[in-house]
Image 1 (cartoon, rainbow over the protein chains, first blue to last red):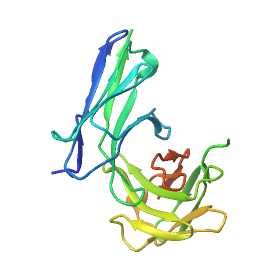
Image 2 (image 1 turned 180 degrees about the vertical axis):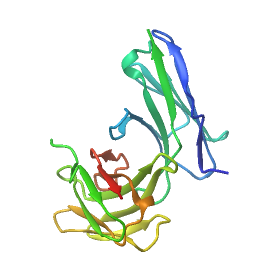
Image 3 (image 1 turned 30 degrees about the vertical axis):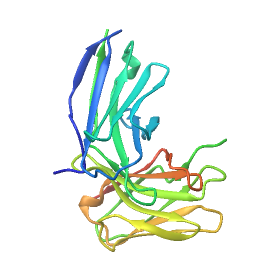
Image 4 (image 1 turned 90 degrees about the vertical axis):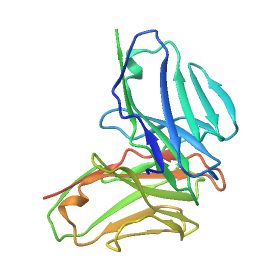
Length: 110
Length: 112
């Protein structure tokens, strides 16, 4: 079993819709979770971090964490074509070691 | 504040050679982590340095090594290059005891 699992996609949504990205992790002791966005040929850029159970909102983005179910999700409201990218879920394991999922490709079509 | 910088941005080497990549963290950041990204394996952790000490190491062979200088700049070295070392090498920095890591643009290495 991989440590961090994501559906590779592609996830295709129409412009203006809500995109829902999911991630599960295996280490029940994990405390810190991150979502990064990576455009093709670019480096990952941080979207959100989340540490506590529940929802965390930042603009059009909402991260959700359920430690009991070992599940993290990212919702993107009012999706735009510019949101088309690969979304990487990462879990912190040890000194500044991020364990990444394989990423979910999101395609937002007009 | 300037972001994380990495040099060189692109590199072509041949098998058996060695390579050194450089990373300058965001000003004030003392932790530098290195990652390798390939289409097959995704993003994988190589190692992390803080105050010139390696605190964490990923599951890579000893051909991969690194160091950090007193100004927090870091280098990683790959010796005896193999074709499978072709990848995007990413450096990320974070502030002391804060967990958010910010990535540099990466060095794309092609081994022929």
